[in-house]
Image (cartoon, rainbow, N blue to C red; front, top):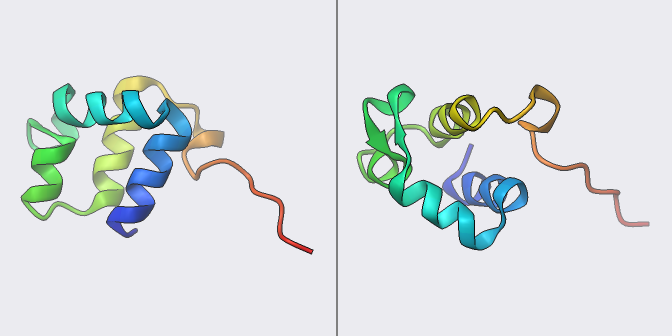
Length: 73
């Protein structure tokens, strides 16, 4: 997963404003006790960070891959 994919998933799930608040303030045990921003800065894989956010925020399994987007014709 790329960092851009991480931010797309965060924005899709939580909204562009609240996703930044979560990334800055939510401490993730699954990322070594860091916030998402700290973990990204430390080089932790974005997928691991995303899944840690999902676990803490109770994101259902069916939404962890992002929203479905219909293909363009």
